Length: 148
Image 1 (cartoon, rainbow, N blue to C red):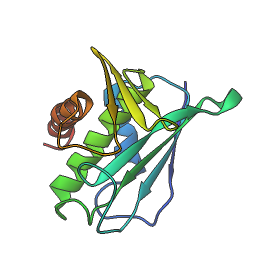
Image 2 (image 1 turned 30 degrees about the horizontal axis):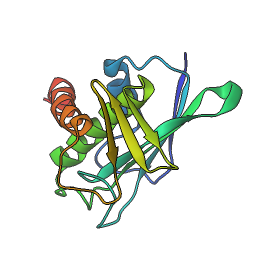
Image 3 (image 1 turned 120 degrees about the vertical axis):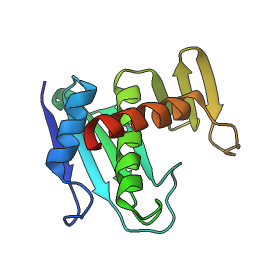
Image 4 (image 1 turned 30 degrees about the vertical axis):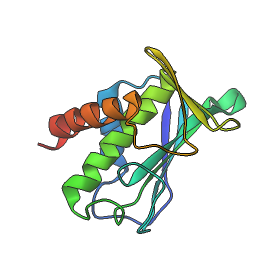
């Protein structure tokens, strides 16, 4: 399996493509995946901690395509928080790839398979879904194992 990371932005001071590839290797994501990694400089971002991950979508013979975005300005603006956000979003990528989390773009719902759980993101409630708990916990573990 081959992983291709397309960093679609100017170089940033927080991480580079090699860092992202090393983190993905630590997660053992074993899938043919095109991943677009985007660093955007906006103050507000539709994500839970300054980033978001779109579910990998089937793209024919070339495997799947996923989209991961990080907004350092939406984070706490320090290096640690940006890197923790990156790790958090990579956990979401892992959840999608392993199909433990499925996003239905038509019905605007998420389905979490352990246990079966459906959540509508419109309107978004203050309830913290189980995939976010896992992403926060495992993202912190990934951050500590790689950066500390």
